[in-house]
Length: 375
Image 1 (cartoon, rainbow, N blue to C red):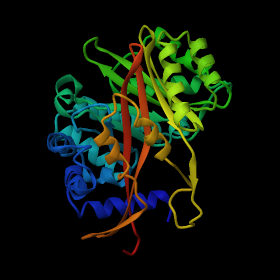
Image 2: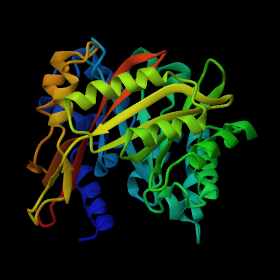
Image 3: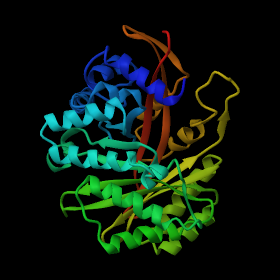
């Protein structure tokens, strides 16, 4: 069965299990440690999930867990794909909730993606990721989710003359929040691309509204760095205004504790230029799976990174211990609508450097569900 047919089958099963993502989440409460998401954090998650159709569970969804924060809480991440039942359900729900402007922007994006010879679809495919801030910070002007597009169909790779692809994705993102990106911001985004070494890619683009300034930040995830010298050269070419000594300090500590195979970066592009905040993502050794029945060809072994994080002063040790129990092999679930396969894992862990020091460590966890045909 191809992926599209699998998604359709999973959506058909999920609508027999409930109406909203809250209904779905409640089935998995026992899987989520109270050290990661406590009573208050769970209530806030459910408040967000209550507004989302259950069909969104047919794509991987997950949680951003701040491993540095005392409060056991998490933000909620979900995926929308144009042309699917979940996208239709989501837009209808947004219209019902009075978010007509947001619904209209999404419909226009989906029309661009589904149009004949769509350049945007050739770059990003059909998927859009939404990240909802939960708790007190997720209300009022911050109630709209952060939005991310990933260049996974036509990768945007350094030294490949893909400035037009960068502009295409950035403009699509800006249209989702009714924000006019000025020429200076667009120019700085192009500078990020031009600073990339060969083989390094701009993996995803996110737009983060800044209510205080009525502006936005474009957050770019960059993957494929192999050497620290590549990163130093990249930041030098950007004329990055952050603390290189803080970056070197973090590298020194983690290189002593683990073998780093690959490094990813998050940079923030503001109206005024490249921001001083930097995200680091360290990848350790890879597991190669020989089982032909496995969903994945390979998995990151997160144990070395988790062990390395133990020595960081800002880490909450209970959360880190709970994190080690999150990942799982594919698990068969017996629902009233039939059998589902569930897979839990860590997508990545981001270390955020700001104001000259390591300020945040965020883990991004995912849960993927897929219906078994005939089950």
